Image: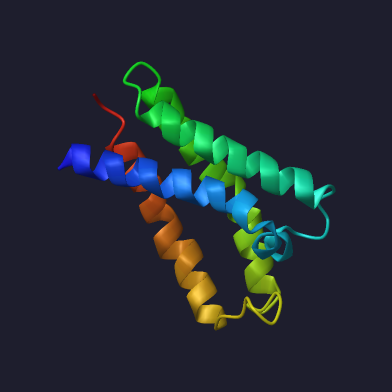
Length: 122
């Protein structure tokens, strides 16, 4: 089961990271206005997600990569809070009820952290 969860995690973060390059415009509204260089933030986070996904697949770098995924998820928390403070609506294409944004922050985000932590062993 751990191997399946690991492969799923690798695919998830590889796709998520790639999507920063495929459709960068979908991420820009999520980057808080007080942060400079949204393009750099977007592409850097996408590159980091791809690299971490690859490193999870390598036993020697897995623990470091899992810790990196956890750190990047923590780094994304201000973006989730920003999304909530903006009422769950960043543009015409990105609008959800505020309660969905809260569920994403309070429940889904910790589950993603736990998921990463659970696949750390060889």
